[in-house]
Image (cartoon, rainbow, N blue to C red; front, top):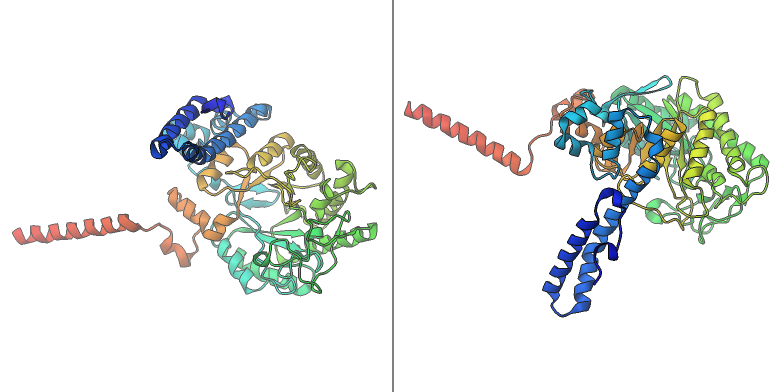
Length: 498
């Protein structure tokens, strides 16, 4: 029976070889103790127990390997931040973990009394009160593109939750630019008024910044609501025409899009400009142009979906030409004192697709065209992708762009704890961290993170101020009540004796 390095390897930079081998041996011994002479059952149990642990360790080792391979991008960091970055490279050691081990070191790395996640950030004329972003989340709840009460409550609740920036779902620039019939838009005057109602609430009651993400679905449009069938086409007779850089369907069941002409590009560019102007009229603080996840502008960037042999295909420069044209047109109408962000997919997760090297090169183009912030996601460009999922698995893409291009970035993807956020910010891997599912679970995630860290964030609205401290729960609450009762009984007994 093979154990340890003979069965599997993890890069030596995390020093795990002997540990894995010893744990393998213990697990194998217990498996045979449980199953006796039944070799197939024992080895199957051994495999089932150890494989997930080994694969998790290998992911950690891969992160460490990649950090050392890219060490050149960190050599200009201040020495203490560099040391912190080195110690947290595998994501196993974190900000809180290091505070427990060596609080003086962490205080030297981050001397400010505010946790790293609560440091402000300025982008042009906008100052964000902290580094937490409510990530864009499609709600599929609009009527003919019109956001309604659900959007007010959904975004309003998160605006009250303490984040520095709250992002809308992708606001579609036209009716055929919607992903589903339930997607929100910004292509009619009443759309602008409906979004203004939401923005005004966020500003008046939440005190946060709110950003509008605008985009066009492209070849991924005309599909069912997410809970009815992800990326599945609408029933016959309900579909609308979809357009893309090339006549290549997203998947086998999806429509074949019509290849765009130059006239189509003019129309779409102007639709983006109109949506950007609508976002300005609605009072949004930040504009984000969606160039990720296989939607229209993303599909121009990816060689998987852009097969053109004209001015808008071929090399990365050619594939980026129309997305940059749209960016320039939006930047021209978006005020100079307001930041403009672009969301990208840093990799298609397929060998023939858009690569992390492409992402770095494209980020340089974005910076040259007036982009202030790159929101670094990945994938969703092709159904044949093979993502390497894991904790904070997309952060290295943001990290690389931040250090190699020198532009502020948003890290997103499986960031779920405030410890993760503090670690990413303190190490200099990103400027902002966007969280989606944690904000679905807890709209006040940021406020609760502040309370858990005993940081007085001063962002609770007066109506909720009484709840700004976490009450004892479960057995702690019972214990505190018992202690209070015991104290009262003791006092009564003392009085009686007196």
